[in-house]
Length: 197
Length: 272
Image 1 (cartoon, rainbow over the protein chains, first blue to last red):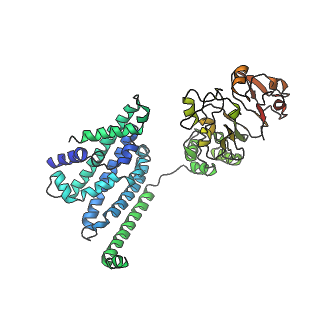
Image 2: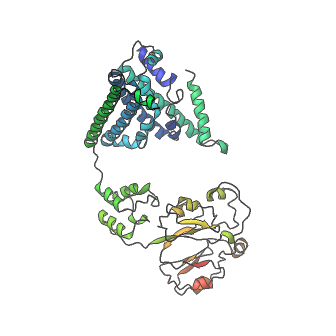
Image 3: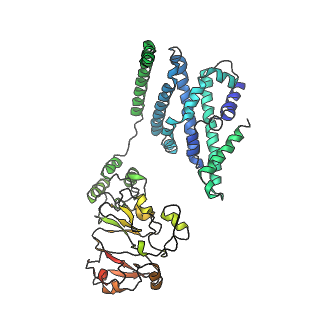
């Protein structure tokens, strides 16, 4: 239970992928104009992150490490992520058209999302994970849980951002700050708030 | 360099890497093909067929997000074939056959700018600032004295996918050879002075002002003063006066060009 809590707090708050580790900034700024699409993007990223961890962790541990070709990790991971996104897209199209329509263009966009590659890279770094979570050794369960909560952390950040931007859009702001500049300032404050942890 | 590159390659590792990449590619290729076969979604055949016959210009003139969206709306009965400009009459007939709806041939249209102001129209001040008609209007209603005429900042030409409309001598002009009457320019124009008229039309009103004669005289040397000479001289009664501005009913116009000759301000013009 303690380790579970450690994963939640670490992945969602202390090491939030967007505002603390600065990964996945492009969807964070690009898709946060309105609440609905931000939530859709967040759910899609969470989904892909979890499944990515589920597949890349065993590939790394049981394939790349024994063969001593760890330097191939990035290429293999990108390869895996792109394939997974493709398959998820097709499966969703078939079994849940509503969810597919809700995610829309964001699902294929995740292929090039660095937060997803970031989480895949992070969970295979055993020493760092042990330091972060205070666990004795890394295993697949932790990897998948970390992926899930990292995705939820991303969702939290992007949803807060979208809420702020929706509010800010209605405020009388000076012309030179309107739009993107004020969004950057808002992002800065969100990041500062997350540094409290 | 060659020493470094060639001698440092370990053939065993190279082969393992190639093998792993090959195996993973094959596995994922098979998986993706399997998933795509298993999850094949039936796409409405009608939509595909309709899409083939559409022009594929993706101009958005119909009000939908591109041709694919328009084809979908057509298949669902939410749109009409006639709202597409670029598609030829032949193809529209085919689409109507696919849908099983009657189709009356629409006349080929072309865009026209109801203004010939440009350098003829006087300016209140010299505008220095962001380009674009909307931007110019935001500052004291634009630089022209005439409140209805062309701003000449080219918002229409920026939206045109065919490069068929451009600002020359301070007023937008349509290249009739390139225009497909998609209607994007008329939607973009903040003054709403661009209209689609039949391609067979011989004359057009080159002014949009609703002002009184004296104000027009002060504002523009080519503006319509609403004298009504064109209305009185039209043998087929195709011209009517609405709010100080003549309007041509092209279904009645016989193309005699009497109005062009009689107009004292030369703002009814022949289409060449």
